[in-house]
Amino acid sequence: MIYVHVIEHASCAKPWVAVITGANPRFGFARRFVRPRHDYRDSGKTWRRTVGIKSCYLLEEGWVCEFFEQRNGYDKPRDCKRYFARVTQDGLDKLDEHEVIRCLRKRR
Image (tube, rainbow, N blue to C red):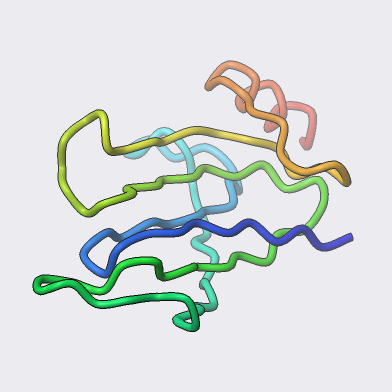
């Protein structure tokens, strides 16, 4: 089953979604980044940027992913959201880092 995750953002924000594929000694987790499909139909321009862009990510059920969302393009911590989740038929189940490690151990 395919799940579509949509992140709405401004043009200066760079959201991303990555599938966790294993462990990595340098970064903690090995990742494969998912390429989004951008939807500009409902977007609009301000004097500095385009707002209301929708980035759509096609995710498969069972994947454990890391998400980074930056709503308005500023680097303030309150504007950024980074989290892990497992893709289920009902949507996303948020996980903490320890649960991600347990999921990786089960795959072996």
